[in-house]
Length: 332
Image (cartoon, rainbow, N blue to C red; front, side, top):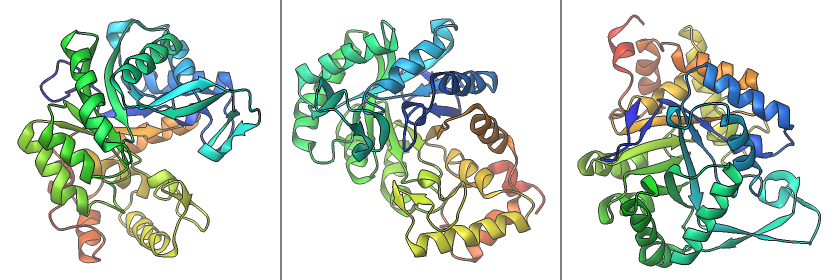
């Protein structure tokens, strides 16, 4: 287990991202979701991340129900604030926002102090918990002023009151996360899709050095860049859309190199972000027990040092990017 910043909150090196069990892209049944969480637990995962945004609260409800059989002190849960859910009778589904669930609610952007507390209270009710360990400001890209002026101070107060153990921000960019690291007293930031084999140079240049300097932990989400690094093929998703030709070509070259070195692209994609000293946990989003087991097996598989060398020689990996120490010393 790794501690988040200067807080007392600890997370497992491999975490479970619960967006998929909220119906991301396609429907996921109740039992399938429960079995996915159960498989994660069986493989030693003790950090679980969710958000109201994921399936309009369905992810939180399912995650809370699945974890209820375990002692509360045995696991760490994070959720997010910034999108407040309000009941809606518009009907239809939520696929416009990426989730195959009925559109029973609508999202309202709200990083105000009152909105943060109300969103957290509703999340706790859906989770069936009296506390969460970590709360992130979720995607404040277009709401920076309110997030820094009201949302962050509200999280600070919640932490000071002992209602949450650690606070931070979760985003799909590095620039504003770096600002949170440098200008606030966050414990952790969740960097989604911006520290991966396909996209890591900006994080290496700014966010990660700042995090090390300030003693802030980084949780990495989207290590597969929405799926392209798990299964590179025409039409595969990259950052929630169809992969551009250039990124597909890079991913296919990486896959070929991985296989030539006796490993998989999935194993390399998970090992890479975990190797940075600022990174406390790598989240994997899985919609089934089989996907969870595969991710856990890939995460535990050593990646030959020769692959990292080959990726650098091909210009596919930044020279300054840390790689797993055991791999750099092992056989090629």
